[in-house]
Length: 457
Ligand code: ADP
Ligand code: ASP
Ligand code: MG
Image (cartoon, rainbow, N blue to C red; front, side):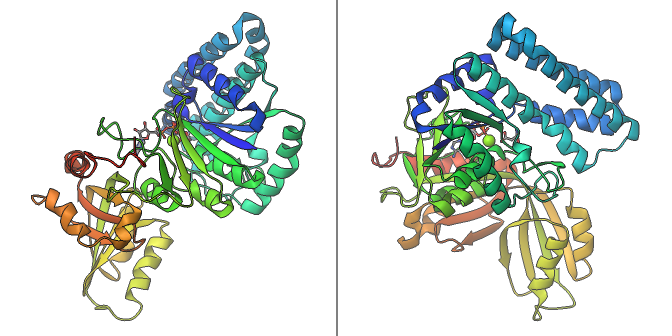
């Protein structure tokens, strides 16, 4: 079987969902399970609605919800036609009535907890999966709507919950497999799950890719297809460099580094379940379904270019921790990392000197409390508006002089941190955020103006 995931832009309106139905039809012999995102921008809008309600702005929240209601009614109406929509309309109506009831409750309390934010945000995928399943059925596909919250079982870290894979796999096998065996096309929302006690959770922004991989690994899929709005994984974000090239084949390791360091086309957690089961992942463009996309697989062919791609991750903060009292005594680094752990702040890049440690983090809210905690150990300074630039390629393992070649392209730049060697296939550095677009363009020009036709398009 096959898992096909359609992202927000591939679900953005009636035309996009109609295209998705055609793409699904072309894969029917492979017995697909469909994982869908919320329609484009809906998760952002739902969260804005929830925040308005949390700030006590009941009318503002209900107004935003009305806009969302109209958009979903319009898309469903266009897809289903008057006859079918009349039956379906009642279902959407009660979903939106329940959402409004929830928003009134949040506004009355005047507080938005992560748990309630998840309850609001989950509506995006609940609605899009319902509409897609109805639209697919109306187009003659035997689809079955599946509520992901019954199958994707997670911990209770609301907003970025982690799945319990064994329980999830058992549930997926015992319920989705029989549907597939009966020739049905299960349609489920990505991004959402629930705790063991049935509370709705979400698994992190952009997490529908991860959902697709969880389902693929759980059901032993032959492949996982991520349908999006670009031709595949590209040599850099095509929004930044329109001349970016499609990468035909890339290794799991390379793609994972790129996803982790900002290539938004793939959620960073996506590949882990796929790697564990050795399932190839394809990135494909739902606007050009005939394209070959990118294949992500265990072993990629050798490549004449030094790098496969450049990723950039913005909104990074550097935290400098300079030892005062403990002067690198045994256990000093441990106590620093424990503080990050206590505040649940993940660290991306680290560099150390005799007396100080610099770390980068991408979550801003927790930093003041973390810094206060760390200041018991050391002098702490933090500075936002930085960007991580990451160049990735298997060739880095055996090529000497890589750093000189990279920094030779940008000799005028003040590099704040450099890291190489952790994975052997990436070189990562930190610069001012406003310099990132120019730096990426210059590096892309230097390393990708000529490409190996075996590997790039
Ligand atoms: P979806 O809604 O389908 O999940 P996303 O917006 O999450 O889509 O991801 C697709 C976007 O990722 C592209 O439109 C592109 O701007 C961005 N992107 C960033 N880096 C890359 C890259 N290296 N290759 C392709 N796309 C990239
Ligand atoms: N809809 C969710 C988001 O916007 C998940 C996803 O699209 O992958 O973050
Ligand atoms: Mg995405």
